[in-house]
Image: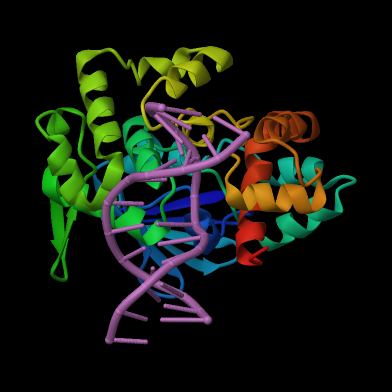
Length: 292
DNA sequence: CTGCAGGGGTAAA
DNA sequence: TTTACCCCTGCA
């Protein structure tokens, strides 16, 4: 990958880049604040900044509205550039026809390393919910309690609120954001984090088992959502979130129909090992795209 | 147009 | 192991 900076126009250009497909990265269910601006360009709010990511061609990406410093400080890690996806794909597709198919359809997927607090609240909202409504609720939370960033062509952009910005938000207030019965879970999470009962940031240093246990102790966080947070916020690539789509494709090709979720996890660990989370993304994208 | 199942799970019984 | 749960969309 080659990185060039246009300081004048605030454009960072990534060229000679493999494994980066804007559409696949932002629509594979891992994030909820990126919207298509055009056919090839998505706009999102990350780390308090409005960012445009444009796919110029299969090996060239323009990232706009950001400085070199912002890219190096936040986006390099956010887009997981330390991870060699080509190498991992090679390993995953060995002796696996299904994975070969899934990887060929989602070859440009990357895991986004996201902020723990935003990830926790977003995925609590995501439980038994659909993507448009999840996005709407997160947008409402940001508009009502986040920090105003800027206005572009009449659209106002806000950062995702911090725990402190949400400390006085009541259960009823959360309900009015369109989160439904998850209102009390969000309230509990915010209060716990501010009081220190849920040491979310510090949980990044927990060992694997302790981290999952601590996440499962948060109301509204079950196995699937815990594994999403472990994968997307705590950068642990072994985590394998089992949702309905992954369940469908696993039962269609890898395990028996009556396999319990827990045993799907065990199977994924044995088959995909430390890269199970990346395998999950290819399988999820493939399963959903082909409406299995 | 009205009615109803179902959705990127979880808590509680 | 089963069931209710917000509420919006899709479809009969």
